Length: 154
Image (cartoon, rainbow, N blue to C red; front, side, top):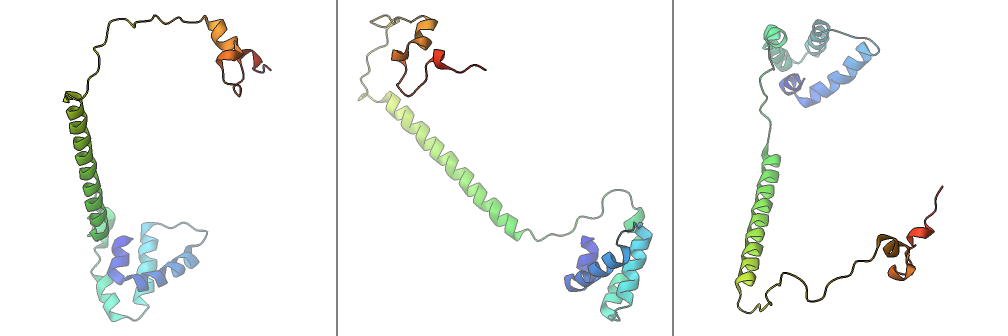
């Protein structure tokens, strides 16, 4: 379809589409009926340049050659600009990550950072409350949070 659209031109092809739908509405057709409809419509226009163009269509090759049709030559200028912007963005993120990594490394190696050495155990042991106390005791929860025992059961 893309090939035929480009061959006859978008304005002419846009006029063919309503004709195609009017003729085949509610019906099914095969490739040969489509080809006949296409040729009848464009040969009937009286436009010699379009007649010459559609005379060059290799219907045998288009219909019977195995595999995909030749890849059309798309205009990729807009997507190329998007890929270029994405590449710049990706590179800037990598650059910022490298800057952050080097800043963390510099901070870690800095002599201004005087942290005491970590001992194997805290200076004061932490007492863990039993499960029932942690979740039933409303004093351990903020006033707005419901306690475990206040949960509705249905």
